[in-house]
Structures are given as C-alpha cells and as structure tokens.
Length: 284
Image (cartoon, rainbow, N blue to C red; front, side, top):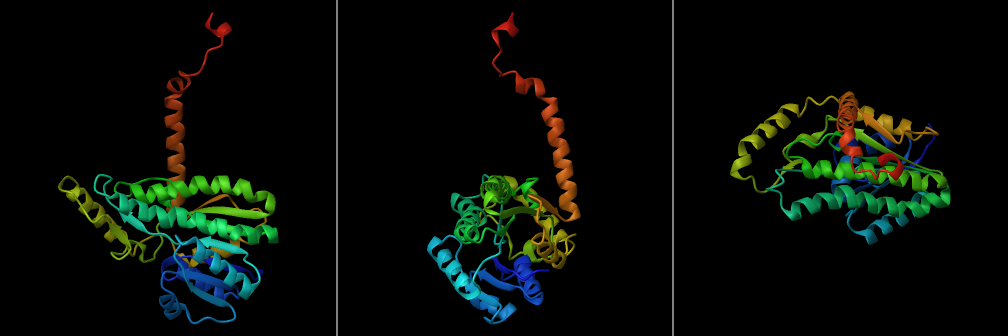
C-alpha cells in the first residue's frame, strides 16, 4: 500500500474518527477537520509530522481555502479527499422548518461541494487524486421522516456522477460510497436529531420510528473498522468504482430498489411514450 496524504472531514467521531486513526496507524499523512479542533486532538492526538488537526466550518469557503494551503504547505500535496462530514435531521416534511432543512443541506451537500472545488486546483496540478463522497443507504431509499437527510444523499449521488466525468480527463477518480447502517454513534440520541416540532398527527408514527432507531443502534450490520480498510483499498485501484454499496444491507437495498424501478418503468411504458411526437407518416 502506497503512503498517501489524506484530507478527511468530520473526523471527531464516527467513521471519520475511525478512518483517521486507521490511516495514521498505516503510515499515511492525514489532515482531519472538525468543528472543534480540541475534541479532535483529545481523541486522536496532537499535531505531528503525520497528523494535522484543524477546526473548520464547511460553509466557510475562505477557511476551507486556508486549510488547503496549510495542508499543502505541511505535506506538499493532497492525494485523497474524503467528504465524510454530515448529519441527520429527521421529521415530517410538514414539521421541519426551512432553517432545519437548509442547515442539513448546507453541511451534507454544499459543504461537500465546497471541499470538492477547493481541492481541484491541487489535484489537477498533480494530475492525480481520489475523491470519496459519502452518500448513504438513504440515498437509495428514502424512509419516512428522513426526507431531508435522504434528499441530501440523493443530491450527492447526482453531483458525484456528473463531477466524476468532468474531472476524469485530469487523472482524478471520484467514488460515491453508499454505506448501510454502520456500528457508530450515528443513531444515538445525540446524532439522530429530530425536528424541534413534532405535531400531533405525526407523534405516534415518529415515536415508532424512534423506537426502531433505538433498537437498531448497537446492532448495525456494518463494521466501521472494515470500512476504513476498504477506503484504503479503493484508492489503490487504477479503476475504482464510480458507485459502491458499503455493507450487505446497502447492497440488498440497491438491488431491491433497482428491480422496483425497472418494474415501475416497464409497467408505465405506454404512459411514458404517450407524449412523444408522432411523425406524419406514422399517423396515416
């Protein structure tokens, strides 16, 4: 395994933290961002020859540019960007406020875009690089009360697909990873955030959903340590996958949703084709 310079967002907990530790253990050089640098230092360690912890708001483009400059000044290059930062806000569409929805999109979507833009000049100059964008099983199937979170992940799917074609001529690979449920604190009460307001018509259904989440927490199928190892394997591939289901649950959902989409498309084929222009010779 070649040693690389990695830039990981959202590294103070969950997969980002596990990935950061695994990368350092395997001899890579790592720049990890968090909203709170001190928390990151407490969990990983102080700045060193191979580790650069930084505080960063993903909505601050100027701060992002400064972090990129710091990274290049310290390590000389950036080989891999992992857009890992993101958070959940759940709730009925009717209950979610505009502010709650926009805040989630700001981090999950616009934060990802900001980071992608910022590393491009470096990777184009290098004529190489890997960008791993984190989608989700929720980017394949949108469950009830997760419309906003799922919407951000569906957006990442489309953005990554287009972006990958744009940067391929520069020797840059873009991979859209869609993890299933990983055994991290993502489903804990501190991470699985509900809308501030839950109106009466939805209370029972929301309680049932929260019960499912609580039951799932600690029993997720995916091992984040193995995901970290998988990421290191992906960036050794000359032709990595554009989209990769991460975990058996994600794989099964992807197959199921693909089959459902095929069946739905075929079922309404005549309705779809009914709006086509008919050539004059065909109408005689």
